[in-house]
Length: 324
Image (tube, rainbow, N blue to C red; front, side, top):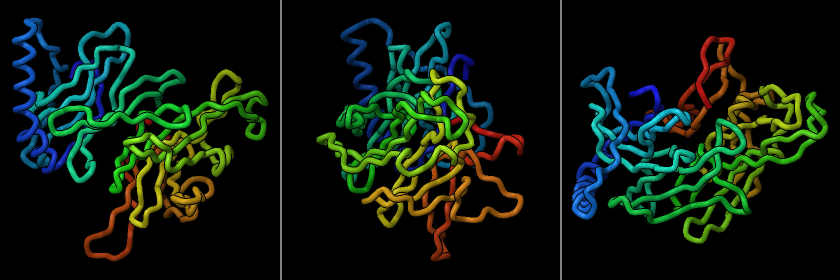
């Protein structure tokens, strides 16, 4: 891939191959032909993606990516893109506005049918999060739902998760004035409140809302406290929300190095996994930090539940880390 682009890749299984290769490609070819007939101008060319290593052992399915323009001096196209194992484009949605970026592009299910979802927006308050809108596309690549955060807030880029009961779980970053003197910061400081919203996709009504500042203290953060009031304290950095099999929620906060289980009705923190106030003991020699995307998995031959954390990251003192 050319250096002017970066992407986060997600390999999707057999269902999404059916979704794209059987249903979507004819629609793509038909629409492309119609566009060419109506307008001789060339269609936007997807950014070239080079496969550096390939193997017959790779999982079955297509690859979902969202190439991005990384600076004002770079050129090319950006947007959600589906490619095969050789890097050949299957579908591409160009984003013409260089100020916007797409992320969290994947296949989900809505009312029992497979759909494509992604976030589109930009960041006005710093890198690592954003303010934008979430989109749901059907098998013909038509937008069938547009989801915005409620209560005057903006949907963040980290999470847009469709639930089995056809609602949407999203993350939100909201800057609020805050006295940071208790953790060594300015009295007239600012802090990012990490927010979870569950939304009715059709009406946009907020069904559930949770605020980190109401449940998790600033003293639980491992993030350095800003020395100036102009810089908001990103003490929590929410980066994922998912449902548990009992109907409650599981969220992840990068900068407290912890996963939280929340009561879906009251918002109460049921447990903390890792972090400064963990309800679980981490084994000797183990380290748990900067995690992302926690999900519950039931072991096939074991009735017990075990927490699996994808995109695992360890503390900097162990020598490796991952981006937010």
